Length: 84
Image 1 (cartoon, rainbow, N blue to C red):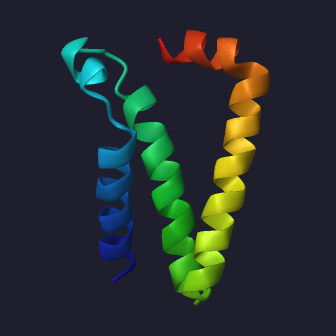
Image 2 (cartoon, rainbow, N blue to C red):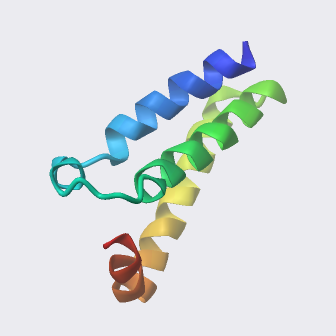
């Protein structure tokens, strides 16, 4: 069941984080496309295992999103260089 949960979240986040430009470029480094969805899917699958309530998952996603946004504002140039 945990594998199914992970795959569900992975496919969901893969759809959210993928952009048509990445697939058009035929980037040889698939790790850049797959790392972020895999990390988020693993985190949410782990939270499902420890039976964290749904509202806390939403709060955690919002906090991580805000932290990611502030990180991007601070280190946006380095992130863009790493992504391609």
